[in-house]
Amino acid sequence: MISREICAKILEAAVSTGADYAEIFAENSKNHSISMVSGKVDSISDGVVSGAAVRVYKGLRSVMATTVDLSQEGLLRCAKKAAAALGEGKAELSIVLRDRLYTNIHPVRVVPSSAPNREKVEILRTACQGAYDYDKRIRQVTGTFLDVDQNILIANTEGIRATDRRIRTRIAVTALADAKDGGTQTGSCSPGRRMGMELFEKEVDAEAVGREAARQAVVMSEAGYCPAGVMPVAIGNGFGGVIFHEACGHSLEASSVAFGLSQFAGKLGEKIAGEKVTAYDDGTIPNAWGSLNFDDEGTPTRRNVLIENGVLKTYMIDKFNGRRMGLPSTGSSRRESFEYTPTSRMTNTFIGEGPDENEAIIASIDNGLYAAAMGGGSVNPTTGEFNFAVREGYLVRNGKICEPVRGASLVGRGSDVIMNIDMVGKDLLLAEGMCGASSGSIPTCVGQPMIRVSSITVGGR
Image (cartoon, rainbow, N blue to C red; front, side, top):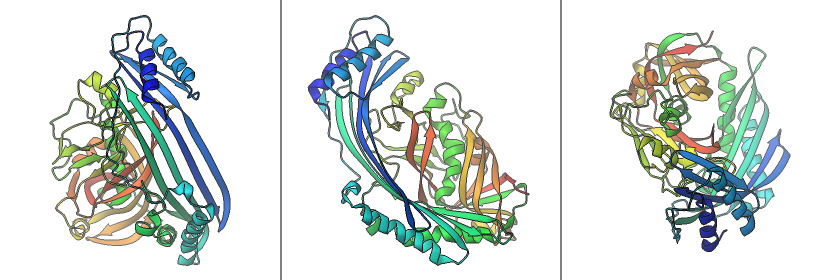
């Protein structure tokens, strides 16, 4: 994308006013999507993101400049703007770049951009038809096929020059069902991987995606409203992990911790969760939606043990916030594109498997809620206060799952919730999503086995 010789010249210009670190992040990405409504193609869109960012540090000062001009002259102008913003000074670094080859742990067999649209449309149509065929109460089905091909280059004054190609493919179906009270209810399913078109040969059954979206919608169409109150709650595996991601994960990112704006700042080595809770952020899982060969600063990703048996072990740290904290990077720097300043973010973040059987978790609840599937929500990482919708929920009485309920939400504080996790199952599952924060929207996985929160506020009617 940019030769080693030109990268060296750009970095020399970037540090010309005394920066003690500089980096280049360049990319050329293609985004393709197809949407379908009621069995017909509604739109096909293509996008290209191409440009570069030059970032410089001097102590705890950081400046970034961007450009879409990838000529040598354009890149040098960008580097000089970043350098000038630091003020006057003299160059103190000499630049010696070496190409670094990282092992690709995410092999792709069929590049999506090489597949014809008719093949993608047929996969999408199969998924949507699966929803329609599930039940006559399904009124409308929408679907999206998405593939991304991101090519990046990173070079920095630590001597690294590396390239990577990040290909991701995803399908999403949302089904709308007529409810018994005259309204409508929705269900959705949206699997994705860091894979190509082979995703639909070995990992994802398109028809089953549609059926699952329809099943959720139909179940909720028969549901009454959830009662409110403080009660024990069992949270299902897979996307149930979004509650840890949002309520706790963001508070473990250095972007909050470095400034003391986190509920978990200064608590390394302390017990912050139930003793059955061990949580990870692992960017090395082959072909997982949130995985990377290396992060957006060129640091290899790794399996970070965030919490071990309830004890806080580490944070997720990028290079710049690591300076403020006096800690090394954990391979956690991420950005949506060259237009965003990178910072510490999650990759695949999940609670690990525990000792309990799912049947025992449900049997332990006399009067509570089973949140089989979680929806969206919001959180304040400083306080950890959150509010999450339950997409599919059931009342639990006398240790048995009973009728479905809708309108449920989980409300609380992250530090309280993880302390109240007292049972952890064995059925770990990851689920795909997009996470938005200061460095843009990035692909992440959430996950967990079934867990029990001994006491949490449930919003309802």
